[in-house]
Length: 165
Image 1: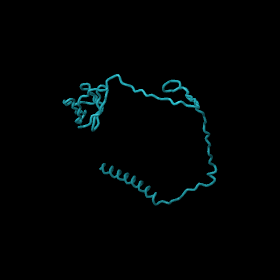
Image 2 (image 1 turned 60 degrees about the vertical axis):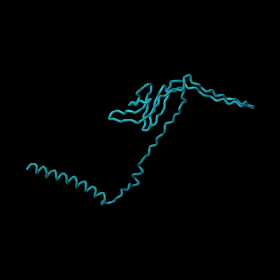
Image 3 (image 1 turned 180 degrees about the vertical axis):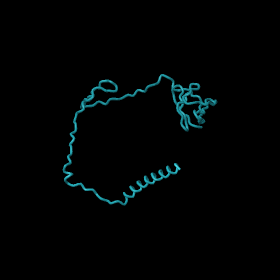
Image 4 (image 1 turned 135 degrees about the vertical axis):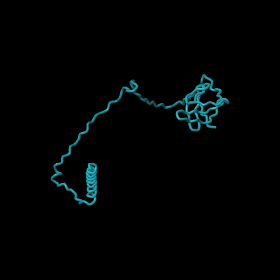
């Protein structure tokens, strides 16, 4: 008996809410289209406030705030010479002190295995197959980066990219 009364009250509340929503929707489509006009006497009382902009001048920065150094002013002096003499420029090549011919081991990249929590790279070094993780070292050889078709390998401070076989 009590449930029946509660259900009837709830049905009446829901129908009244939906009725209000429907009435407002229909009223917007089929209501009168009256435009509101503002009389001229009301528009004359409106006052506009003018905002004066603040002006300032930026000074030249003497000190670099990031490096905490004084900046030097660079001045260019142009000298005009009546008979310019051509100057020969020589370029010196730097020869490294270390040996650039490093004997790399034979490398073959066979792809990678992807498990739930780790990726293993299949790399054959001098006829021996290794399963390596990234940044792991074997015989002085370090696998630095992995791509879909290649890997980047470091050996004695030199790098190479090994392609998939």
